Amino acid sequence: MKRILITGALGQIGSELTLKLREIYGRDNVIATDIRQEEETEGPFEILDVSDQFRMYEIAKKFRVDTIIHLAALLSATAETKPIFAWNLNMGGLVNALETARELNCQFFTPSSIGAFGPTTPKDHTPQVTIQRPTTMYGVNKVAGELLCDYYFHKFSVDTRSLRFPGLISYVTPPGGGTTDYAVEIYYEALRKQQYTSYIAKDTYMDMMYMPDALNAIIQLMEADPAQLKHRNAFNVTAMSFDPEEIANEIRNHIPNFELNYQVDPVRQQIAESWPNSIDATAAKEEWGFKATYDLKQMTIDMLEQLRSRL
Ligand code: SER
Image (cartoon, rainbow, N blue to C red):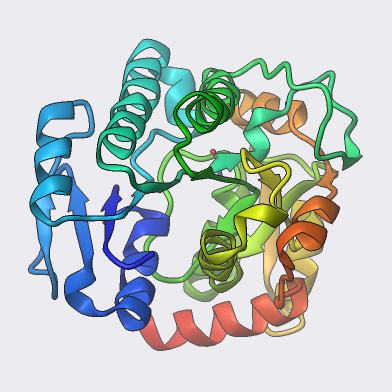
């Protein structure tokens, strides 16, 4: 990775990844793009709607990029409310980004998700290679995306790489429209109101990861020796698995009067129940040395400290 084009650069992952990549590869070597420009960014920025393949190609060519990191997509809960729009945006954007990578001979990254699994997938220690029959539009997009990235690798030799991310937790840019978002909101509300009403039910376990580990994982995978990669699209990665009670208990170690209540949202609960409880990241560890550094305890200390100074 030397000159990188990022789509969805103002999103949850993009806003932090752009800064981190600029630190490593140099400000002018990371071209941020998004559908809107909200504020002045330091470094190259272009407005890009990912459904416009011509413009994507033109920007990539103009900046002579050798890497495309395609992040623009709708998350699970939003995709469920607008399934056809999600199909068009998630799949159309992906194929445009892959075509640009093929034409300009770029290395390629796009995230997959625990959403690529479904109710018939083994729930615990979910293996790298297993049943993937998701029942959400987001999941259908993610499985199709994994297959499409494999196709571009085998058919056109595009160096595609991907990670199946769990819920990502960060204090910088809030996520929007995801099922795992409760695990971000809970920290904000714990500090603001000492109370949170969870839309996910007690005893619903999902994998999670703190953003610094997710950013490192992307960079490490993209820098990994291709000869070591057997799976490519996409590696299971995770740092922890918890239910709302466990994260609330951890928060209570810092805010003892924190109260957790429930008002379960049937749509997001159903999505969460169709996903694994905890996935197995052995392939990522063995093939390119994946390692998460934050567990629930360390993440909670850092989240509360960072948010306290921001709120
Ligand atoms: N965090 C995502 C979501 O909840 C999962 O990839 O939609």
